[in-house]
Image 1 (tube, helix red, strand yellow):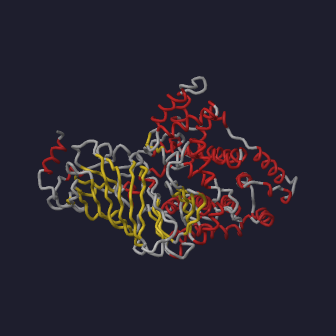
Image 2 (image 1 turned 180 degrees about the horizontal axis):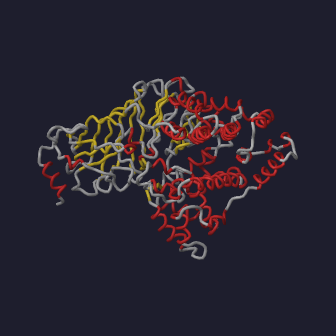
Amino acid sequence: MPYLLRRFALILLLPLALAACQSEPPATPAVPASDFSVTVGTDPHSFAEFEKVRIRHLSLDLDADMTARTLSGHVLLDLDRPVPGFQRLVLDTRDLDIREVHAIRPDGESLPVSWRLGSDHGHLGQPLIIVLPQGIEQVRIDYASRPEAFGLQWLDAAQTSSGQPFMFSQSQPHYARTWVPLQDTPAVRYTFDATVRGPRNLMVVMGADGNEFERNNSGEYRFHMPEAIPSYLMAIAIGDLEFVELGPRSGVYAEPQWIERAAAEFDVLEEMIDIGEDLYGPYRWGRYDLLVLPPSFPFGGMENPRLSYVTPTIIAGDGSLLALVAHELAHSWSGNLVTNAAWRDLWLNEGFTVYFEARIMEALYGREVRDQLAKLAWDGLLETLEQVDEADRQLVRDLSDRDPEQAFMRVPYDMGRFFLDWMEHRVGREAFDAFLRQYFDHFAFQSIATEDFRDYLQAELIAAHPDRLSLEEVDQWLFEPGLPEIAFEIEPQSDAFVQVDDWRRQWQGGEIELAELPVDDWSVHQWRHFLIGLEGALDAETMAEMDAQFALVEQQNYEILFLWLMRTIEAEYAPGIERLESFLLEVGRNKFTAPLYSALAASDWGHDWAIEVFERARPGYHPLTRQAAERALGLDQS
């Protein structure tokens, strides 16, 4: 028996009712301090030793205090023990107040066990190390989150549309540990149950089965997730919510002020689900509902199964920004069903999903819209590849010593998508669709690495088309920096953008007047291409003329407005600066705020002004938005 296990065996000969330790060790520890020593495990972003002890099922019982900004209660963990003699359980935590830990015997008896919080590892938090007696397969942890929990955002009444407080979680990539002690790695999947009690005038929803369609009178809500998920897909929200059904298995939740607009905007949701099933097999999660979050939500969307989060900034009134909904829905197959086992392989989640999103958009709106979106993505990817370090220019990236939040950039999304476009181009759509459908079936409800995909690709697609695909070419995409030369076989083109470029050239050359631009026929994507092409080319006078003609400063489409505000910063255009100020105070979506703050910081006039606006906006921003803005502005992030 290894030395460590002999020491545990001696400990466990003592009465099983071991006194629980606090995070600070007692004068005479019940367990030698060395047995509480732990470093990161197989996943460099988790302390979990999941090859030895693994969570199988999780049961939450929590009270939500909207005033104190805490979740408190307990979690019951059902465990698998692949190594029966291994007698400790290591969980991930960050800024959690651990109160008690008990082992639950098979007969239901609860016994206190020794535990300790390890040292603080910054964004990774602290490992919770628990002595695990032989024969124990269930552990109860009583705990509470803290008001500053990074994975929870608490909004007071003044920060919401409804005038009621709101709370929502953001667990990806490794923030579930800030509100639940668990194995916070995508390599571990589990089912869960939850009972959550909130204020009676608010509704509790989760990414699970059991969401109610109207507020109940008790404030207590019960949930069940029968499909195994990784921790980053844990999701909870509490607010003044209403629900509208969109189809037999789909609907939308939103605050009262947003619900009608949201229901109208997302009326094609059920059709999107049907398209997804036609492409790549059955939707395996029961319902698919959307939750429109307050504007402070830091992302466009989050793919929580059964209840995807979306930002209200995609509600444009004309369905023109539904690519984001297609993206979150596509995750029901790529990401949620088949998951990257570690964040180095994020492209397995996001590259597949961007490809799938494009197929849904093509089915809904035609090939031209797909081409426009592809061209925007291609141009943005090329720009990103010029700006980032060489180590970040490839699909499989070493993130061992980095915050996994840094995995989320254009490369795994767009370069991953074009890798799949390239394979489709090489073998044909029919063969590639058959392969993808088989891939989702084969790896359903599993977490995999790039190497698993590579082996499967070799066996199932390359072997069937050796004259069209080779492993050497595939490895160029996966492991070499930048787009390989073969990528330019599928460089996207858009006739609609060629026309926009020609109109822009004529206007800038003085051949036509602003009023002659055929903007009434342009899609939002053509408008985006037009404004991107004007980077650094406008002065305040020209912008005033464009506003007089097109009312861009009053634009309600946030994608167009964002680009207009970027041109505003370049030209120091006064009416645009006024709108920029209100935009930064209202919207917390990182896609918009981070580049705007970066552009202000780099401008001749805007750095100090941006800091003043940020300090006012800061209380309403999610921690991720605050963090990105502080980096952009060069502020102390301590």
